Amino acid sequence: MINIALPKGRLGDKVYSLFSDIGYTCPELLMENRKLVFVNEQAEVRYFLVKPTDVGIYVEHGAADIGVVGKDILLEGEPDVYELLDLKLGRCRFAVAAREGYKEDPSLPLRVATKYPNVARKYYAGLNREISIIKLHGSMELAPLSGLSDVIVDIVETGSTIKENNLRVVADIAPVSARLIANKASYKFKGEEIDRITKELAKRL
Amino acid sequence: MELSTLPWEERLNLGLGRLFEQHGYSKYRMGKFEEYGLYMENKNFLKSAGIITFTDMDGRLMALKPDVTLSIVKNAQPGTVEKLYYMENVYRLAREGHEYREIGQMGLEFIGGEDAQCEAEVLLLALKSLEAISESYVLDVSHMGLVSALLEQFQVPESHQEPMLSALSQKNRHELRQRALAAGLTQQNADRLCGLTALPVDFPQALEKARAAFQSPATAPLFDRLAELYAALAQLGYGSHLRLDFSIVNDLTYYNGLIFQGYVKEVPRAVLAGGRYDNLLHRFGKPQGAIGFALYLDEVGRAFHEHPPYDVDTLLMYETTQPVTLVLKAVEQLAAQGGRVRAACEKPEGLRWRRAVRIADNGELIPVKEEAE
Image 1 (cartoon, rainbow over the protein chains, first blue to last red):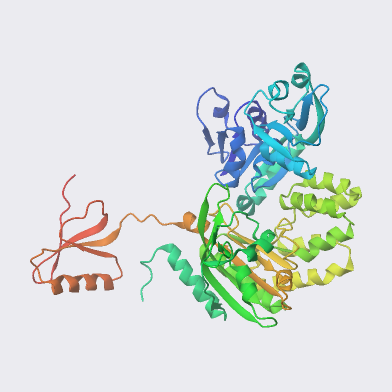
Image 2 (cartoon, rainbow over the protein chains, first blue to last red):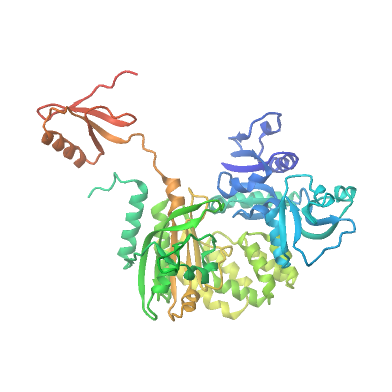
């Protein structure tokens, strides 16, 4: 039996169809209901549907053997897991954005609004830039417009939201996409199966 | 003495202590605190920030021990050989970083252990420790010398090393390839490097595959040593539990040779970690080498914690009017049979027992009928 943590939502649905293509079917999962655990004894698979930000935690703690999670969440949470495959789904990037026409004042600490304080802190530490972090939970674009922050560190997909709000990307931090991750101990004891899954998934990308 | 009534964790501690004593290690005891400076100067060795500090009567800044190895190394006499093991509590910030925890740690250190024989012994004890914990266990083995030789062979600039090692430690082929190419490796060398993230499970096969990836002659003796260690341990029946795995990477400032990490099926994280840390001794101005490992027993304790269906095997009911000797004798008799006994005049609330008996005035034990619920 292999336990797989999938992120709830669109990405999870896409990933499930990849897994079902390689034999880990569980038709019940596609039905509209509120269940969070889905088991197919025949295919020897159990799926957990969890909040995307929690996938890494389920896998690190061994509640799930493997899981699929965005690189953004891996970079922010840094769970101690193996990252086995880039599934190339949900591609976007971490970027810094500022108001159109904004000019940075290097004599002051940079005020950075973000949902991802760890990513922002690491990025600016690498540049030796002093910053103060303002943690927000949504509507990031508002922060520089309202004067709450100088810049935002956020995920940018097409850049249209940024443009519509009169912002522009001033630096790219890292590419983001969905990754297959594995618990380290599970990999020692179910390594053959996990390797097979990784290979089969890689073929379908 | 009968030990089977002890909780699993305590039996494990005793068993491991006995194992280490049998191989000539003596128990090292130490105080709960140490001067903070020791940890400050070696904070990368600890890998976890967040040390509990306090000021002593002389104004010195002290710390509750977050680690045992540093104290052992500090106190080792230069040039001597010492075989030590310890069972101590250490104080660290929990992984999620929200609270301090007291963590039971057990480990052994072979100070001055330098030849292949010493390495084989420490690996064997690591394997036997894992065996004492679980039937399904794996010991991943790597060599820091090989990892650094590889970086040298491919002339990886210093600034690219850390991100490459971090990708290697996550078995992250896609990023390892990108970073290798960015560091100036050729396609072919990048492929060769990525091949090291997925070695065969079989140790000799993995060793051959890895040997082919390394071309520098300097690494040949390191591979020979690994092959020699494997052969010795395989002879004793431990071959199938050993894996060659380059994803275990440790700080080169402290570790320089063999490194290893142990897993058991029941625990989601490594329960054992160790290696050769000559560089740490050299930092303390001690010329000898050293090798050792630590076992993280808090994780193990949780996974194997027993939930027995009963608190005691026998509940012995007596009357306050009965002579003390009569009751005491009966208790001793029952305990000698190996079970856990509780004597009481009234049924203790919340206690679960396998059987209840009443003691008659002639010493006879009469089963007590359980009242219908």
